[in-house]
Length: 435
Image (cartoon, rainbow, N blue to C red; front, side, top):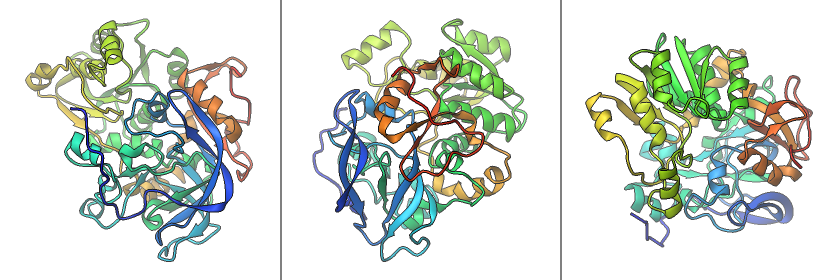
């Protein structure tokens, strides 16, 4: 069903910011594969619960590439992209009590009001009060909470890929960064580290179980790290077609890999490695990555928005009464979904939802990041200037290999004029490969 609603639903905060007199640089969207660094007005406090943050580091998420290709409804020219940011508090609204200017903070990618039923149950990404999109409500039955920089389907909020950004309900969605944690690690807590953690926790993964993970991007690699280093997985298989990414992960984690360009029968290979099927499968690949000519043609013709191929492989590769976590983004409808095997095998297919990172932030900082039990910078391969962010989008989208360094591009730290010196052990500043 194509959503036809044109009106906006009420929200508990403004979805646009009040522009100030000063300007800043920000990454703006202007069409498919057309993003630009633009000069725009800086945000100022718009509602009394706002926190304005001066970025000291931003990044590009794999899900941003869906916007880059214009595959998410309701993105508009001039929208500021990005939903991950770490920085220093610049301004606070009159009702903010937990932060003052100068505090180091990381902001969550999602926007929660903190007061609705879902927020009180710590399901923050399902907030009822921060998304204006009637189209989402029409398409999904209910609307999710708003997300920074992720189209008007998710609220129309300005994103983080800028020198400054606005965080509504700052006391709910901003967190103090422990002094011993550098920006390079803190930035990765805004989304990907805790999204991967949520996928593992939400599916109820148990010590000694086996797992297969589809997708060797940032989320897939972080899931594999959580499984092997924290949750005690017996065996983890990482599946992708980008050989350098698989090699990067295998060099750093106790995992096995499958390259489906070399081994197209993925299910058969998983069953060779784990007879009877894995206990838990994770889809960290998502809706855009059709494999067969059939599904590529169906997506091109608009017959389906999402391909079911990864999920079908996971259903076949998962043991009877096993579990599948869908943490990758899916948007609409697919054709040819293997629902018969899902039912007959008793496999639980669980949508992980957008991760309620607010529920995990303080715990994961304290229990895993500060003590060094988990290092999110495992996936950090490059550091670029904000001036080069449009080039970085193209390189990331093309999964380029950096011939100079001999490594793939997996996750980048984008520095701003306010960035601190590079933390020891993290990538040095350099040019975007291929430019």
